[in-house]
Image 1 (cartoon, rainbow, N blue to C red):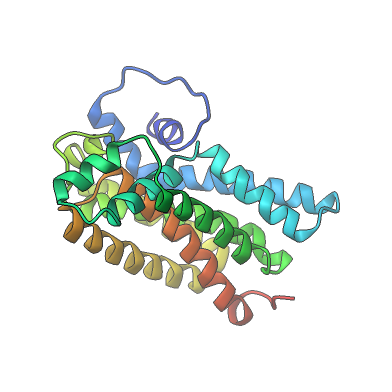
Image 2 (image 1 turned 45 degrees about the horizontal axis):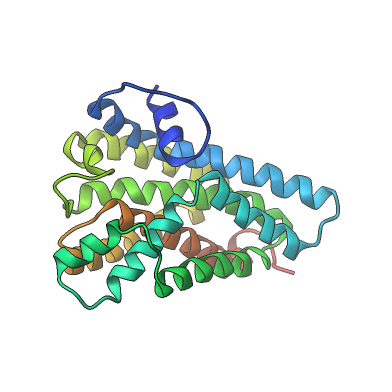
Length: 251
């Protein structure tokens, strides 16, 4: 049940689960990496299919990047855009939190979405064929884990919000389970390079969370979404740097 709630919360998969408690919703955080595994396997399957059909590598990178945005309903990109708009407003914490709740997307928000999509395409395209499937799965797993990490590492900046049940009803064991799940999957895919990736993303998520706490007084659903997007990019960057040593040579 908790895994299905995680999938419903993180994707547009129409599971139609209703009437579950805040505690049950909070428990689903333990399965965020497994939900990321499902997303990653969908992307890896699509990447293999399009490559088999002879699509150019750049076209496949574009399709997969857009498919990821579609599967997640653009939720994390929206969080990135709202965070960027608030960040550059030069207003008080209260006003910045209000800006993040404004459904309108400003110029910097639009720029941040475009930049995130282009960076993913640019970083996915040069990866060797034997790297792309583990890269896609690892990216989705570890970035969803980063959201769970931030929920326990930083205070929530709002009284109420979409992410508040995870903060209020969360238990340390959910982070432990999520970390074990992510660690096992990453080790299976990338061996010790996967564990190094988990440590790298932990550092990235911590620094981004510290920055959000300083600016906004804590994390919000939008800053968590921004963290997921940034950690996806950081994962692809990490794999572009390390694949020569750990996996296979980039053409």
